Length: 414
Image 1 (cartoon, rainbow, N blue to C red):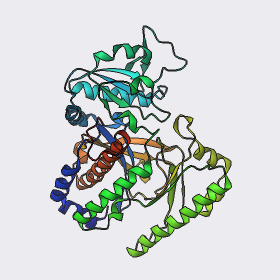
Image 2: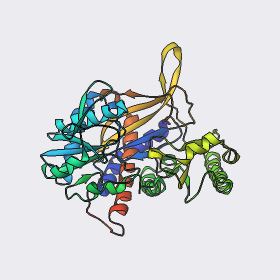
Image 3: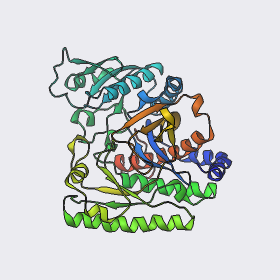
Image 4: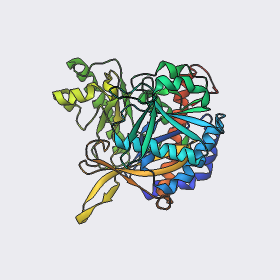
């Protein structure tokens, strides 16, 4: 990233840490953020409350992750015993299973026993004695409990670790539990809003910008919110195009102000989405009017085939990060940082062999590049960690609104 900007951030590190520590109440158990470094600016462009990237953490991070997860669980009164890890139902994704295995391994390293279940029974699968054995991408065996049976054993657990984003809603048995659910099930994608999250994020960046002495735009993306619409309707796409044209002009004004020689572009994405689904990029608002049937279908439904009615138009932040490959070529990449207790526990690269600096890398052609703890001991990671911690506080505030709407300083399980 720009050396001048990086040095300004690091020069204010002490004041930044004091400020962050003053606002880090009830932070999420864990989270991850996608960090885009454009050279001239650096920003979080997405934040995941139920991260599925533990398998992408190099083993050199495991002791640190275990320590921070132990501290995060203790914050909510879970200090010992057995944890129930609630995983997604897409268990045919062997790399997702690898993530669950890695998470359980780290939790055991933190001193907890673990069992695994899903929110809903797995369709088309036969459980034996209430369990189903599955094999991950690297050949690890996972025993998945039938949630219908686990309900009768909830008294065995001291807490529930959610690794399920509840895109299609939350199971009744999970809503009724009395033990801590971390992070809160109320903040799944059935209720979370990217627009809400980034509103909190930008508000926090106002304070951070004052500390650093820099326009907060250098740490955030401009956006616009569209609600209750149908992407298949001409009138809806016209409305989106109008907002996109306004947003592109706002981005261009910032580029002109700071003499940035880039062409503005925007992402149109589901306001409640994850896994890079229901997303397209544009550098001309008129393109939105002319998207084809395949693109409409892509935007119409997100994860779990949930129909998308609310969208976020987000300023596109290009990436300058590239990963060298054979024959002198390189693939574009972005950083994914993971936190527990809002403290750094790891970093890896999301790389895409088919995409350029201006498109979503969370798509076909994507692969992950693990980084060691030693490789992350640098100013770039320090800066990205600050940005991610601010995103974590924004998540905390979003969760507070969902779990205890109207409460000023809620005490909650997040």
